[in-house]
Image 1 (tube, rainbow, N blue to C red):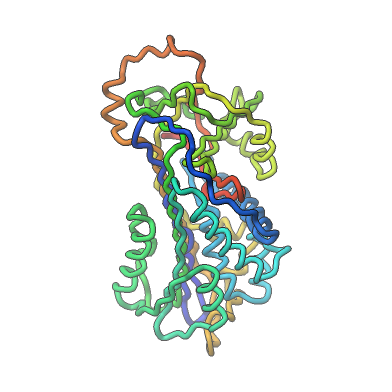
Image 2 (image 1 turned 120 degrees about the vertical axis):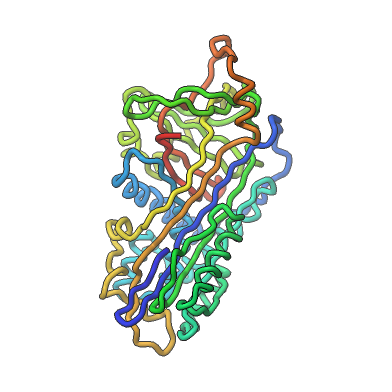
Length: 414
């Protein structure tokens, strides 16, 4: 939730909610059947995706610095979208700082807004076997009148619902949280803990993603196996098994292994970056950039080896103000902030007070627990060579035609 502190009023912006659910219901291995709905990206869209991806790696790197050993996950696309709605009401040095931090410097405001509109439209319909939905909303104190241009941009390009509420009443919080819960299929039930009389505005983005693997894991093969943490300790966790014959991309060298698992008709994928040998998450993370990931993926080959992957579910919440300040937009959070383009006929000085981000990710298959019990005792030494992800790793959810990163995180302790 991001909030705007004016000197005389408080503007709150709830930024960046995400649901990511990857569910596998049957142990079938289908080949893709339907052609994806592809179209070339415009030049402006390519710039926006590149900017968003660079922001993804910079913000995730800053996030990791504070808690390097924790399970982490964020949706850079969601954070970027929510902050861009706020950007549409910024001016002066505040606008320049936000533009620089979000990586939008080469683009005009029109290009930035049109690119988000086009990208969300592309992601929504590109794969009939994957559900992707993005929604935006603006909740403002009913005593304030929004600037027409600010409202028009966010309604036209972000499809934002605009609603006046009474922040002194609990019904305001309930309305915002009800909207968030509905847009994330109940996986993120709330983003606002309370509203106050001096709140001015909440800007909220919600993203929902659900994709079935192109080649599905067999729940009957799921069983507990050891996962080794970076401190050397181990824990038995449920590992899913993808049987030999399923196709996915794989690259490895002395320092890392890259695994790219497709969803649906292969337009979306989960990319795993796993340290090898004496490498650590930190050493691999220092090399993990947008261009380096592209290089690794270009060098990857198709493999049909069996794959053993931990089942995991993460729920994560983070206040992003400190991280965004580190990345260069600190002016937006203080008394010098300039959001003069948000409200009509108002001299109130507004500033962001909070950028609250919540994520949810569930990578599993139905019936995993029961299948794990019945499959204990399978002899692994009789199996052919396989790929085993049994140590901490990075993961990303990407859309391939646009190269957009929807989600980035690390799993250190399933």
